[in-house]
Image (cartoon, rainbow, N blue to C red):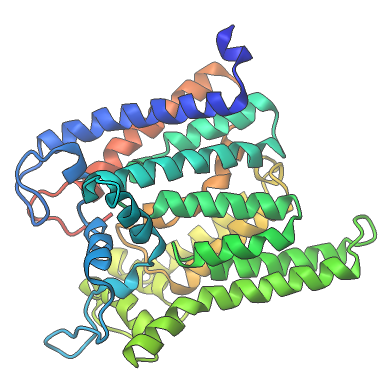
Length: 388
């Protein structure tokens, strides 16, 4: 009875922190079995374990800033460096350290609180399309998702989720002007603003072609177009800053390409080729190409299923835009599970069935997949080549 009377935000908070508590237990088990590695000693504490892998880049940025010269490998190619990571998250974490918290603790606190914010905004977003119980279960699925441990590690993902959820809510509610400050912060937090610019462009076209049923006055046409252009420019701002700071026009893209060099060596960025390169690396050709085409077709079909259509046109436009963005620039490897996480509005479609057996089964499966993700992507066994 008390649960039913609780306000929606209290329910969301209890769900989120309950999920984080379960994940913490799982993570502590992994940490207790972790051997010595480049980031920690054997059997590290929680906060040390939560700051492995790319989490250290954010601390490097806070302590030393970004390099004015791009580091090079022995073969003369741009090496992995701090320019691949955007500044908002390390600045926020650094601000918390000024209050006296160690970096490892501050990074987790910021990530967890941002994840709570994302859950609260996601509930408001899902409530635009789903009944209360379904909107709440969508939050459950978001909180226990296979890659949800990232929301309590020293990564910027949960902050990116918060800003994306807020941007989508503003778009759905057609509060276009408020998108600009959100987009600015988002574009310096996590990549994805270019995909959202495409979403806004498609949103403009949709409203234009449906203007007889849904009026699209001139003022809103100009505003949406302006915000779309602004978002595109915001998405290009960081590469421009890298160019200005280092003198290298391709400094940002060359930095990003360094992370895929361990798989296929150094290549120029050619849009819409990386997935096929990855398919060839993982399973060979022609099977790699066939697999990529199958994934693209299957995802397109998913967008037209009744469950996904229930989420409205704007969320579907985002899902399609982000898919195109990933197809254009991303090289699928062990980080794929984390990189596709901004498609989290799909939890709304998964939340539709009300059968108890279904809901408990999906939650249990998600928790098992969390263990799987931690096994293949986070824990280090000394031979690890699968960064999260």
